[in-house]
Every structure is written in structure tokens, then in C-alpha cells.
Length: 242
Image 1 (cartoon, rainbow, N blue to C red):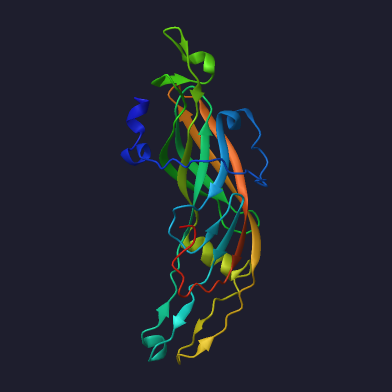
Image 2: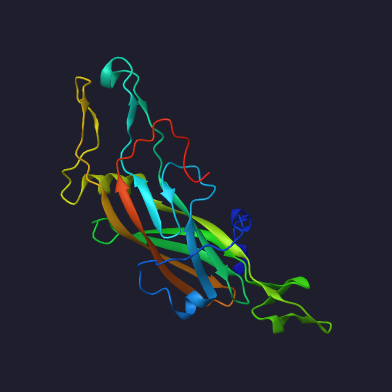
């Protein structure tokens, strides 16, 4: 059965309250019939413990693990590095449909970067409409909530799905540049600091989400954000988006 594919963790998703501005995704294809039902609202970094910063349509991404303290003994000593993380984001959705949707995969692509698209399989439940006068009654319109002669309202819930935008490999490839001739700051074999030659970049990042409801109908929604990649110094930082 369709419900058997929903994992326990998918049923315990965090619900994010309040409306966020959508802005421009920069990725054609958002305004289609699928997106009217499986409606993407915005990206958010709220509650994610990481150094990178996520906005509704933008991201600021550190691509180099900075050495905070060289300690003693150079490269063979006890250097201290900043907290260097992969980049995750919450994708905020509202399911305006009657049936729940199982979001089962997403694909991240970075055009012009030379990095191949990365598809991730997941299991996140996007709850459909529920009647105010009967929490188990599915609905898409208020008219669906006429129960025992009492008309309720059809309520839709915003759902946050955590996705991996950029992994460590993505960061390394973006940092090295299209010719592979860029390097992060570090130390040479004698333990002396080397400055590196990282150039900040701004790249469009596209994300395609796909899921299906219990009838088997599939929904595909395209969105994206603009990401700035650079060598940030997060020494002493406890993370962004608490």
C-alpha cells in the first residue's frame, strides 16, 4: 500500500508556522498545475545547525575549511579548524490538494559549474487539506467540510522538508574552479601558511522536487536559489540559522 512507503521520520516532520515571502526562484517551470497543488513556498535555514546561511531565495556558502590555530609543529602538529559543514536547507511546502503527497525525491543541479546533477531519494509526507470540524476529514475546498450539516473550513498546513543542497564534494569542486587551478588556504610541508587563491562565485542552483499521492498521480515542481560561494572565516562561530 502507498502508506507503507512513509517512513517514521517522515511522519514527524517539523511544521514551520508563518508565511514567508517567495521572491524569485530564478528557475523556469514553477508556475504550473503541479505547483498549484504541491506549492513550494520558500527555502529556510531555521533550526539547522551549520555555518552556511540560507535565505528564502539565496544562500551564502563557505567552500574552505579555515585553519583557526596552527598550534605547534605545523602540519604535523595540532592545528584547529573552523566548523566546516555541508549545506542543508528546509524546503517549505503547502499541499493544497485533497490527498496527502509523498515527496520521494529531489534533484539539485548547478548550471555552468561542471558538477553533474545529484538526485536524492527521500520520504517526506506533505499533508493535504484537513477540515476544521473534523481533523481526519480530507479536503481541498471548504465545501468538502460539510459534516452533519455543519460547514467547516479547509485548512492547509505548511511542511518543512530538510534537503542537502551542497555536499563536501560540491564545495571542493566549486572552490577549485572550472579549470581546477584554485586552492583553499592551508599550509605547506614545512608548516608555513599558504594563502590560497579562491575567487568568490555566484551560481544559480536549481532544485526539482517530485512526489505522488495515493492515487499514483505524480507532481513535479521546479524552483531554485542564487548561492554565493566564498572562503568564509567562521573561527569562533557557533553556526547560522539557530
